[in-house]
Length: 278
Image (cartoon, rainbow, N blue to C red; front, side):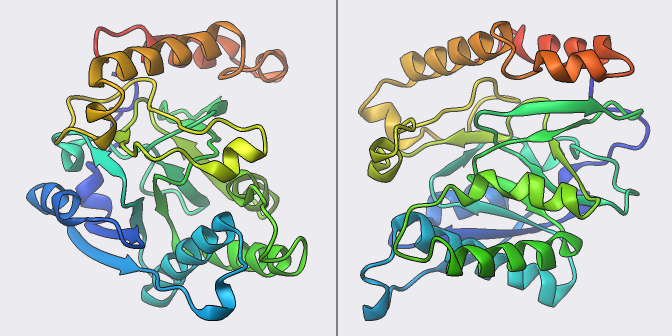
């Protein structure tokens, strides 16, 4: 198996803390599923002030993630951060960590990916890469100061009232600081929301996104199962994932050309997709 080398540890052994980001969403089912895995959950609810009424939804979401990052920095321990519409797979705590735990240059690692790209495969067979989704990820204390500075810059330009895809800036911000970021072999869960994002649609982005391939069956049915159809949506997510692989969007041609061992990258990319599991 790709990410089960000698240096791999279980996710629960690296960090047992999960910060759940929410506004008004129901989180009890998510908390229960994660606590059954052995995680300790802390629900972080955002309340909007009158002065925030004109803020873009993306910026309000940014604020809530920043508050979670500050918790990581204050406690000097890594944490799993998930949004309220995340649906974990069964046995999530037993799954392998997507990077080597002894590394001191880890910035963050996505546990759920959207529009992911991979840059390199480590000797321990972990994938260094990028994702634009913040549904579920690991944040390390070392990464937080750089991301807080990014928050300050975006707060000035373009400012709170304007939409900005800040989640697309995280990887390059951390890479500039010499930190490495990782994506998983398969997704540790699903984006379960059935509520399309109007800001994304207004800026010509996809209104919804789903996992392409999962590590296993989900702990509970996502909200979209009742409106979109569970298996139809999962199949479409898988088709899109294979399409991104075939079109060279997951492992890009320019990355393969400059890679020392491009077959490692191609092998990782192909093996994660060609599985019977939806």
